[in-house]
Length: 564
Image 1 (cartoon, rainbow, N blue to C red):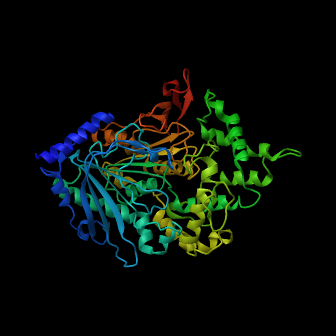
Image 2: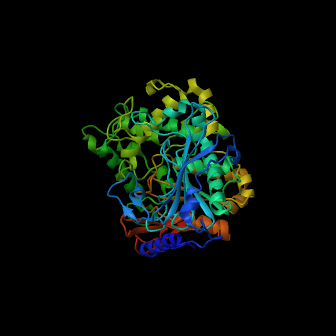
Image 3: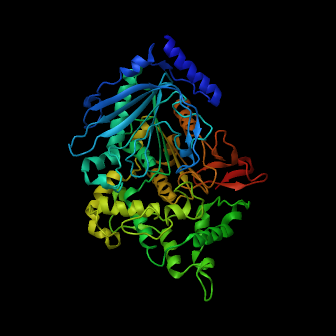
């Protein structure tokens, strides 16, 4: 082994010791070779289109360079709790490239592949978020990973991600790319398959063999991508984790649009009204699990029990202590299904309404509760403004650019019935609602889904309904063999508001590689700092179970049990 490789390896191990990283047991550990720099630089060769399993252009490797080890860093601010953490990285080979489009008017697909010097024989593909358009580096913490855990790269996994085939441009709506059909198909599913195949080719070139185990981890849009890979490309991954997936995509865009329309006038709720609803939900449901702790442990029962109509203003009441009739209607609209006049992909004709709890979850950056996802700080405008709710920014933009294909359309004039042909096309491309996972199960794949029950970016009931559709399609015995659904009460879309951190990569790899199926897990709520502290913990129950208080400290998971 060369001195250069030894220096890189020992830098990594020094970092491992300093950061308290626990190494994953290798499948078959491999190294980049006796001169890692030379091997890395040698990866900068094209990957032919023939290496990609679907119709595609070739991949060009634009750069391949060895990157020095870096310590963990914590930012003061960030859009999500996890985004504030930049985990420690070992010495690794960073490969950047682009996959050429078929349509010369379509943008290329950018990707990044990170190859550790000491490889454990596995890989992790990271999913994206929102409408993508930003290169996912594969260097951060994957969804739900506790802040004090080593990143997959530091554990010896090859990691990789993509921009899904378009780059956001300043001054343009993030949905602008959808005007090009190939770019939209890449966003729907093709880019993740193409990048997966290119990454495998790069691994073969670097280590002399393909990965023995491949994992995909994604949240939100990335969770939709994760389910899409299980449904469309069932032989490509051994283990898949889908957190808060935007599963019924066409329905979600329309439900988000409707939730904005209903607040355009007198239906808009300010922070005082949001807190009023939040407190009323807690007053109705907080203690139903046996503990008064500010968390609704059984949100399904709470949705049935809570009546927002009881907050309707009576004569003489100040508006900060009650809701107007228009505001009550807006809240009821948020909680009700959005129904189409025809069935979309896989027979669905509606999008389920949102649940209750977490309405006033404090924001991390731009995200948190109703004030961020649904309402923003100002009533919806056309075109949307940065102060509007994220759901309106995404939903109204999706209506204009994706469904109506008219960027100048006033969303208030949009009628879904007039655009059903396009809605059906988009649903067939985007909705990851196919309950037939038999091909994925047959190849030995394992799938874990996680829903956050105080999620107002997408409805957790969409994922729950999908899981139940899989049960109906395949039978409970077969589904138990390869799939799990967990539900985390009180947790916002991005993992704030309640215990949300759990090592799903470890749970997946134990199941895939050792046959250890996950049961009840534990989620923690951690402070965001270099040495995170656990603030509280809860059991993470398999659906339809929920955590009920037994006795003891309400900040400890051991004080709760999962019940039906």
